[in-house]
Length: 606
Image: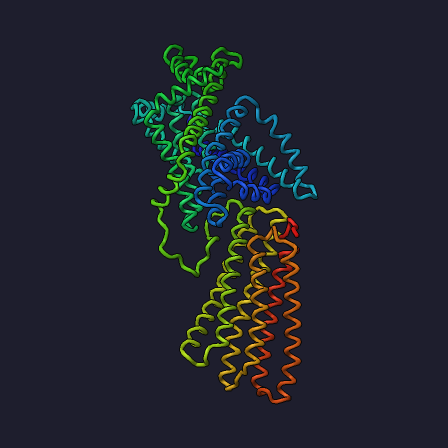
């Protein structure tokens, strides 16, 4: 039977279903436990060993080392962990990804997946119609799990039958007999295939099926699996391209980890592959090299049986079919053991050299001498593979946004005391305008990022957090507008030749002192949204009352001072405009505090 274009498209569709299943399963898990996952990732930064264990566990759960390393890149980009801490998690992720290989090895061939898939989909659909968000997320997880194994089963059906294409088989046989050259060639195949489909698990599934059919030898299958470890680094590399230097270093660390591991493995590849074959035999699963030799022997001695072997025309109970079935399990276990052994040995070597490893990565990816002050620090236009977790990046960026706007409060206060129409006044006014323009751009960029997160598969809680953050950035930008408004008031004051006396300046400074205290409380709350204590919240509300009372008191006193001739009416107008502007600033600050209290705070402390 010739391999047609339709068969090839069927193979692509099967791989697509496999990858989509992993994606849906991962997103369902994130929606069911996204926030807890974020807390776990924060706790894991304690030391390299907890990071190793956490990376392994997270990757085993979401079934994708690419997804977990993209999360790590995102968290380094967000400043939640250092480069050294992220390395330990990446080491663990490489061990965790072997869990998928064991799932495939244990269930992909041993169990008729169609028996479990349909009941699983039935249960999942029932959960999808539940009114509870968590139940729906579990339903999505089960749907993804079912699709994953459906894709695996279909890959087995659509992988090209090389025996029906003798020219392709002859070419493959020629490439398979070049010794070390064959190893490098098939390693490169693993790199390229995994880089294209962005999943080492999918590559492993395809290679496992090809190897069990006797198309390639066990050692060459090991070479492809080894190459897939390098190919899987393409996803975090893409994710880091528009990130900061720390994110780029993290992605480079992932690539370097697998490259260095491949180097030592290639140096001892033949004995290492033989060791894993021996290990497979020692645990009672047979020698994985036997399958290729068995199929080749049948080709030479029993060509009639060989010709019927791959067109499914042999009876189900035939001795050849039975023996091949036993050897298939041996190969599947052998590849899983090779994948696991390689990553464990690699981690055992690298975990003790973390600090040296970090210095090497920093040398390969040098930082800029001075980062642009007016660019976003934590969020970027990179990949958004984990929308629930990417919310943390936006939270960090909002905190930076608020700190930059706080500088405008200082500028505006300083501008009030700067001599009118002086060069210093003009320079400071221009800087205030520049910062106001920057605040507009920051609000727009953060809002765009949040909207992109909202387009992903989010839990109801995640959607509520995004809506709250959109409100917060609007309030912060309004604070920036108020600061810029001070400059405009002062310009009108200069044009009308009004003068402030010492009392006005003192009262404005007192009002500014309240604003500074309120801003500092707000900034502290924005830095740890979920753990805001009760006292800072109470202090924020008390400060808002002080600002309002001060405004009311100054307004009454202003009328009296104008009537008594203490200062001119025009000066009193601009004075009150500044006080009203500062009072509005206090309102915007307390609006941010209200949003934090109502939408983010989880752990109430005294």
